[in-house]
Length: 415
Image 1 (cartoon, helix red, strand yellow):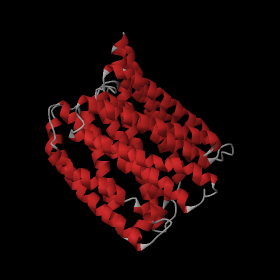
Image 2 (image 1 turned 135 degrees about the vertical axis):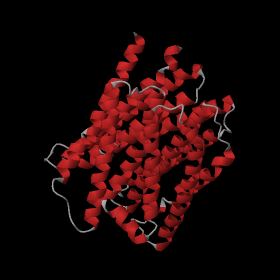
Image 3 (image 1 turned 180 degrees about the vertical axis):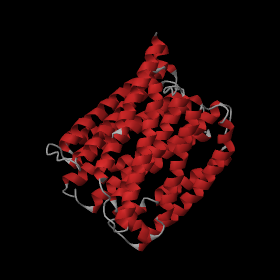
Image 4 (image 1 turned 120 degrees about the vertical axis):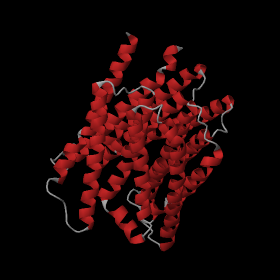
């Protein structure tokens, strides 16, 4: 039974391995702009990269953390272990099939399997939390809502095969479905689950955040998440009404940020004496990246700016990476360090964390700089593709170092 209790750390290592694979796919994509790679289909590799990063790294890392933090009954750990590994099979299926065939029968089948498994995880977790009698806690409400957004986003995955098979692959409907999935994953599932885990850590130290202190942030974030999807639709239907819906949602989101900052300042500072330096660093980076993300969305309140934001690819990629790497991945590393799954006292882990931060900061700076130059009509700066390729090496390298750090940590515990 002791081995079962320690499973989440092993799961996190598997998720981190998926992160390294996604980083390797990203490296191939960057290389394709520097040298000719006739044996790959860029779009197919891109699908593999995004699916493994989101469903293999972030989803499974959150899976491990949620099961760990919410202390599901020990008798249920074997069930969650089997569910994890079946989900990992689905991820590996997507990692192989997407680069080879793009959206084809095999990749769609594995994607559908993953959707079914997330539904099963949500139902099982809800039942266990209800049995434990903590379903009314503030953090559990955020967690439950994150799964609602997760299932909502899955509707797009279910619809994609129908859209593709009916010959609408290049249509606005296909684009809207993809953006629907991404939007409610990023702004719904990821953010709400991360907030839930932060509130859970506070509860671990007997710092109970009452619902009255977070309900405004909760409702504002929920409403704004629904409304800001309108920006994605304006790509194909640029009508003023949709811009106004998005602008209203962005304003609500800015108010939600203020509410979150108040909660963070009021309760987060109580953790200062309990958290290690590296945990505080990554928590700070995660929250700062979230604030920057919301601030950027605040800028696109202006319709002309909104058009620039979603038509210049560098801005789009930079914004997605800001959420995935700067905010969510940093938060996941903070939680892993807090649980001592990652030990910065180990030199290889410390170097891995530094390499990750260097990769995120430099790549984001280059992407937004290049996007700004394109907006200003200045074209590409010299050696852009070579530089962004060199920087991209840091992510898979950092993941590899962290994986070896976890393996070394687990081996030392066995001895």
